[in-house]
View 1 (cartoon, helix red, strand yellow):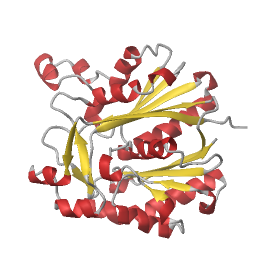
View 2 (cartoon, one colour):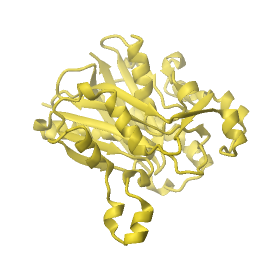
View 3 (cartoon, helix red, strand yellow):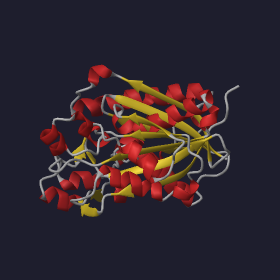
View 4 (cartoon, one colour):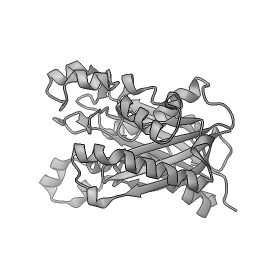
Length: 317
């Protein structure tokens, strides 16, 4: 019999510079016109200050839940952009020609900085925006196969490099991080099922191709996750979406025969698309306001480059 696995203690951090879509458009950092993104539901986003690193975000996100970490046995550290999985200086490598400068792993620093001496570290870097949901899946499998692990710290952290556009696939992007604890100890949410799909033939899909594949594959990954959990969509109380064009969420809800009013991304206007962190940030928003009742099931889904689609179903305890 599979052990029950639980998710709790969500924390996040955002870039210290807040800009409106109009301000970012005026800087030349968008592909779409600002009014198009505002109509899609985006108002502001958060970008890194000149000295902020992806690792700074990771530390800040974990600091918000530091008291709840407990005896962590593993850290699963996800990055969307592979460069964020190394905190070594590129110029140091060029000067020394020593590849150790390309293997200065943030997860190792996190383990040391927070005194998580028992924890092994696992880096996850090829699932793009789906990486945090992917880390929940890995944590569930690890806890069931090696229960002595007890607690897993899952996190994702990314910042775009200097000069990058802050729009991807018609979404406004924020730099930031999100973290949570996955454990065998009863906690706020029971992890019922986790599932993913990859179509590597679409690894270099354009924005239009990515948008065109979104509905079919997202519908499929949700249906397969429901089947894995032995549930129907009617058994789900909330669909906690990624922060994307609100119209796309409504269309997807109708395809699923799900109430669009319960397909939610409440932080979309003020947080934007925090790369891999949206689902947990939105879940935290709902949970803190008491909107999710005991026994209600919550579906989280994310699409990302690669192309990848991942889905998780939780149950409020």
